[in-house]
Length: 116
Length: 113
Image (cartoon, rainbow over all chains, first blue to last red; front, side, top):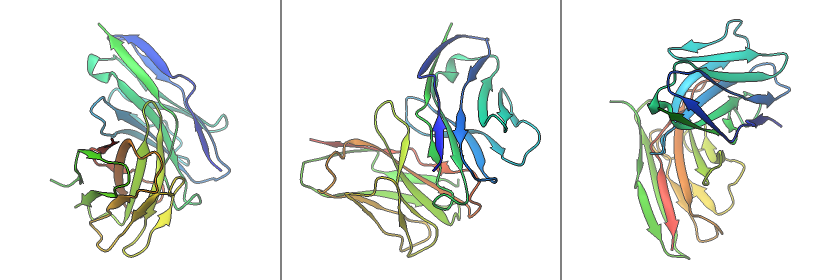
């Protein structure tokens, strides 16, 4: 069975600073996808960034980058130059072809609050 | 614009009543999913469907039912058998690639009075 662990329930970060959100995962599959989603208070899930298990380079998407350490089964999200609009809940998630045909398994989330 | 539409956004129900949440997508996705989210928690999978007329139970299917008569539509019925139905419900869809991104609707918030 797969498992996603986010150990930080909440974080405060000052505007313009960088923040790292931790995510570790557990799977015996070789092929899988790792995702980060942002959920603002309005509730919708916004896709941020994706890392495939066979991708050799860390994924980047604007101010978001994913620090992928496959041997450690770690997929931390780095948000650079935080903005007030980054205040939200952040979820790490994983999909695998061999677990219920790719259902998205979520961690418990990290609440980020950006302060001026 | 392509996307996923959930309705209603807010729904109130009395105990003992069934309620159906609508989910429609125009992204031409094969797979569709229903997730439940409780306050301060992650998402848990209720049901998913890979193709029309076929669907599978997720981790918390008890008290819920679904249908997939059309590719674009995947309605979820919360039955009276669901013991704690008050929650935020999210519908999602994706292409057939099982490691690809899921696209989400804006969610439906169900409150049982």
